[in-house]
Length: 253
Image (cartoon, rainbow, N blue to C red; front, side):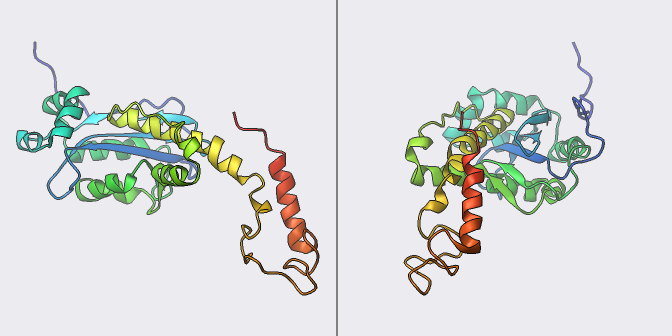
């Protein structure tokens, strides 16, 4: 039985906003044939939109991109095994999508949700995705803000500062575009609950941690910088106010 060629992807948005929202976040993941954008190619791409509170609003189709056999045959053992096990290699061989048509589909998906150059590129180790995107999908790369929201930054800090919390992050390791984005969003939610908000509580109680403070410094007369005894003066009042606000936060769940 013959199959008609696939038409360009038409996103079925759940509930489109009245206008693109610059506070929304665009999350991206790409699966590649290797790590070197000079010789390797993009195999799959997907994008997910969340609001600023990390609630998922919409997700694109996960598009497998056709590549010649020479690209697939040049993959190392890890990529052959991983993308073979996930079924991505078969999807790439059967795909009619090119990098150019996939790029346009992603731009069409993004247009009603987020204005151009408003959202950072969000994901895990997104500098690698950005390198490939700049080479093979330059219009899509230019759509993103030049900043990145890279969850791997928090991962590395958590491993060093709170290894007990780092052990709470588990990965299923599907290595497919949509599944990896979902894991990145879940991971950032975890860090927000257990690392960012929890660490903010009482952090200014540690001497020298407040912005502008100098370890061991004191104001004339034995007080703290700010012109009075510890906790007094404008700086002390501001810190006390921030502590009170932090203490009013609900405990992490």
